[in-house]
Length: 597
Image (cartoon, rainbow, N blue to C red):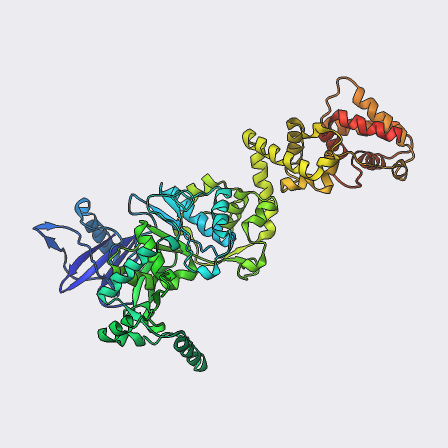
């Protein structure tokens, strides 16, 4: 919140953010936040501005930030009290003035955020991270999450990418409230279908002189770039067409020239508060030339399109990657030139590989389709990118989406890049798989998925269709939890024995022990013994007892033989666990095969 105060002859702005008091005077650009432990005493009379005979806290519509004056603790308390005076009647709207973009939480009843990817590639982890933070922020404050496709660069569009982005949001469990597919009150939600809005905005800027036509040829612009490189400078447009007379412009247009439109950058610094990176100050005009905002094919550039769309879609908060932080000052200049109130900005730090390298689409394994086909659960990805990111207290594994929404704190996002350790994915997935297995409804969904996998992998080799029964598959799932990381693990060769009967030659068993028939008959007798519950614990005890009846066969060697007879494998789960998984009917069938071989 902010107010204009008068201290003697000077006018100051008082801003309170969290527990800090900011007192600033106009026309200076250095800023210093003051907390509760101010050190410098301040002398002077404090009075509120008057309007219509009533005291009120006036908004400051045009503020450049400004040196701050330190205030002693008791003075800070006094100022805080004054801010509360007649607060209910204060005629302001938070975040309206230049240089101030509001506090960390929403200050209007309608929170609206957007995820605005470019369909130049399929959905990947970096995009999921940005979408997720927008989604949970919207849901935490009962707001709306919008998907907008920024497809103005028609030369780089990838067929199917637009559909994939929305499909993957649905798969991840964070569907948009408004989107190209779902529609909504402020559509269309693809920039290529909103060209008239950008043209209108460009015309408005041209009328006020905030923009101008540029007739420079691509050849001239390329020469400027080469000249800059030759002089070891950053390429920038020299603003040549700024100086064209109205008559010259009219003549060029009459001749059929097809100009682009450039935005006239203001001199001086633009200061704004980012909800993650704090106060920022950029002098855009000192480092770059006037940017193109509308190309001669009628398509806008990113800078104009995002400002126009965020305004017309009523976006209250822009949560996007930190690579756009440097462009925010330019966007604020566009908002000012168009006479629009900007949203609040929060830039998210980069999501990097464990070694600090940048996530790249060229890696191939960062696309969501890769993780989905590999058997990783949506909640696993949401959990790991927030666990290695920030905005949540502690590094707690296993958070669900409702827990992420409840615990999210925008002010807790770090400015440090998040290093993502994808080697931990199986561990995260195992935890979320166990959580699903403990829920009856979710477990039945997993049963259906696993049945489809079994039919696909082993369908032609299934001797006993009972293995596709719900009870059997559910038993396999429950026994495998804690050991498997993905459903796919249960259809891997290591678990093939639970779906098909192994072909084990008698000679192979005899290399382990010559007492093959004796051991098989003892197991069959055990299965026929009435009153013995065939649990893993009981079977372990009974198998040890059976080994005592086989002269000259050690317990370990007997277990190796039974494991080979039941699974055809030398390694795997404990024999008792195998027997429980297969069930007495199937164990009996396999022991009889041993005897008849």
